[in-house]
Amino acid sequence: MVIRTLLLFIATACAEILGCYLPFLWLRRGAPAWNLLPGILSLLVFAWLLTLHPETAAGRVYAAYGGVYVATAVLWLWLVDGQAPDRWDVLGALVCITGMSIIFFAPRGS
Image (cartoon, rainbow, N blue to C red; front, top):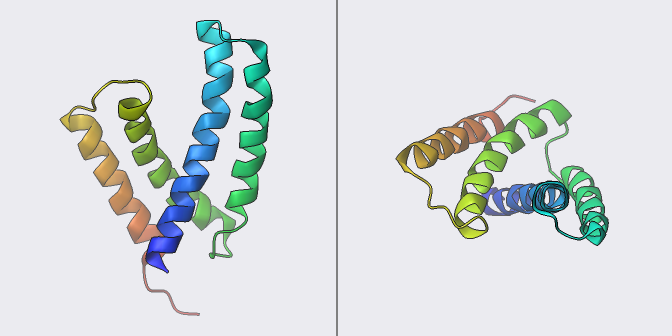
């Protein structure tokens, strides 16, 4: 369940980042306007993926997702933007993943 949940969080983050990155390319780097369509579709997929997370408390899902989003964005910085993360990027991402794990996987009573 932990691996499945983490993979779902990563897919959700990728959908959101792509949905924001494509309009960024259009607005800031002169990419064609047609980039907006897959960007919009990606944000729709992002919203749908958020509904698939096993936790029923939306706020907890969003809080935990934020940690995965930060770590995924640092990976995006490296793989897509071509900028290697520095030690502070990596440390920050690890802190976020630690926080996400505490929020989402902590044992709770029913």
